[in-house]
Image (cartoon, rainbow, N blue to C red; front, side, top):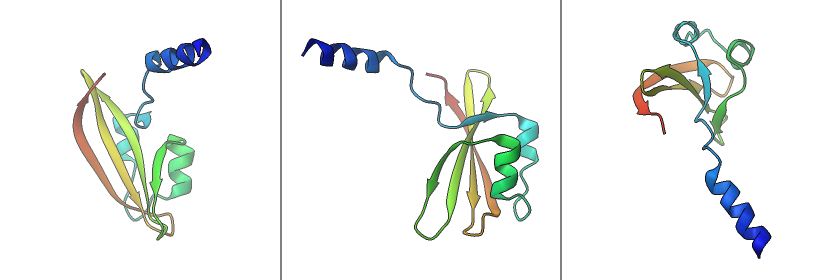
Length: 95
């Protein structure tokens, strides 16, 4: 029981995982809908958090540091692995 309490206490103190790999504004500008691919994103930005859907579509999540927090960059890839959309959700406060 003590071990479980210690384990839970350690989990509660661990920082939350970031919502995605940090990228620079220059890297975000280099993402080109219709041109950039899954392979090019992996090569230039690295692995990040993603959501895959049954139809093969994926959304990849990156974060761009801004004063006091970050902006969330969401990249939509089609089933063939080509970037279709890039969206920027403005300022999420740092926790």
